[in-house]
Length: 264
Image 1 (tube, rainbow, N blue to C red):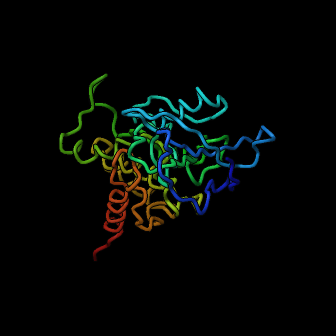
Image 2: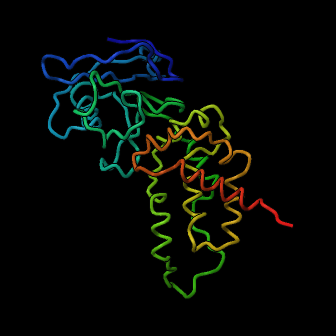
Image 3: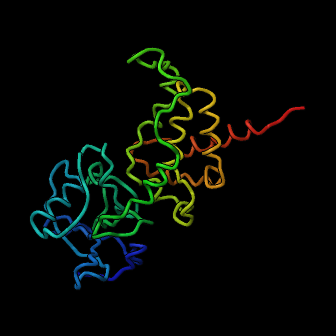
């Protein structure tokens, strides 16, 4: 069965979940779109049925659907262990990683769509260029004020500082948080939660020094930075790595406010 949808918004309105099929297969409603195939240029959903097994993930189901039912079905995946971030999808109305989402934890039929707010390239594959540009904008690399203390000598970090920033280092660049953020969706210039978190990861690293820290804070609090966040918490809710993204953004706001205080 095929249903027409808008490829830009990749949403099908008015859908309701249904009980699992009596033949004990699981129904997948998968978004399909291919601008290079005349019969598939209109975005729509297609139904697939897979035989579930213990531990089956959404990614497992997609691979089975592709390998056994339609080899043209297109989606990204790589490590299958939740660390590469390539299989971020919109599953039953929420951004999730296909490899970390168990089939038996979802209501059926399972609706699988591309990440919202990204141009669809084909089926479940979206163009991530804009997301990567936002990440690069915060200069996501270690940049200390001073050279290393000695040739090939390790630049050590205190245990306390490591504990303070460890959650922010978990980002896998999947784009789920930015996809869930309505502010990032409406304003191309807004850095978005992933990029701000990446900037925070280095801003809060004691090894970069005070000068670099001040420059990072200035970069992250420019017009298109943290002040556009409306504290919706959607980014924190969908993050597969459980990074407290909103908390990091709020911390940067507080630090920026303190930095601007002047005393006479």
